[in-house]
Amino acid sequence: MIIPTVPTTDELLDKGFRRARKAASLKRSSKIPGQKKAKVIESTRVQTACQVIRDRLKMIIQRIPDIESLPEFYQDYIDVTVGVDELKKSLGALNWAVGILNQLESDYMARIKRSKPSDASHLRREAFGRISSVIKRIEGDLDFLDFAKNKLRNMPTVDLDAFTVVIAGFPNVGKSTLLRTLTGAEPEVADYPFTTKGIQIGHLERKWKRIQVIDTPGLLDRPVEDMNNIELQAMVALENIADVIMFIFDASETCGYTLESQYSLYLGIRSVFDIPVVTVFNKMDLAENVKYLEEYINMVEDPLKVSAFEGRGVSKIIKKLEGLYEKETREAHDNV
Image (cartoon, rainbow, N blue to C red; front, side, top):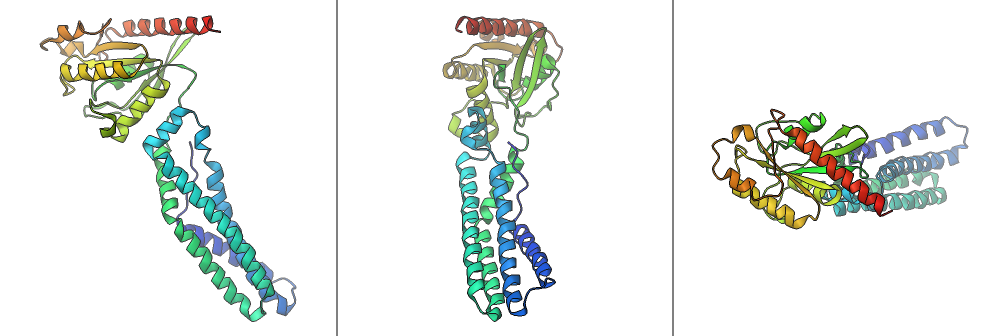
């Protein structure tokens, strides 16, 4: 979702009043009778200022799509990232300001028309004060929309109709490396927790098959209400778009989390999501001396042992995903 550039209150007022002065200058040079000219000039300033500011606010409102018409994935992503209720509230405030500006334009143009020429400038100044007051009332809402624009600038474009594999697991278990190895995508990879700062997307293409693979931020083994925004983005991906979850264990425990903790998270995900889970034990090249490794490998269904960094075992993952893709395709065809 792209939010247009959001001006500050000062920028909005400066633009409106500057354009009003220019419009008034054109009226000063026109052939209007002297007694009437002062009233025409001041009413033009009020009308132009209201129109310019109102049109800019309406443009912002119209350029932001109706959130409730978006797919559920994007609604949840927006809610996690900036808050849907807060976004709606700020858009509602802008809509309120548009309505007030309409009313001010109508009221003051009528009052200036009925006034004495000597009172026209006083009424225009009064109108400008009211306009400024209205815009200052929505200062916080404009600031929030600018914040939302920056936060949602890199919102991922997800193919919601594609067969989708979501990679999950603790931070630094090698999810980004595996995504790169599987699909050729180039996410940021570094040796610190929460490497992935947002959802990273790649595609695995084999003959006629096109599988969407998504690397989520690292999940911590704790309740949803205690998760931070990065973790919640991962949950959004899992909840709304995953056909398959690929859970990654760090067999070497070099991620900083024990196999016991990783297994606890694995069980939690298996209990929450009723979809196939492909289990991968990564970093096997570093796991020679890890205690209880074979015990945990034997505790999961059909484990795949790989080294994403070295590329060993990755072909087994691809074969497994292709099989699940074909199974879903057959089931979808049978249900038609």
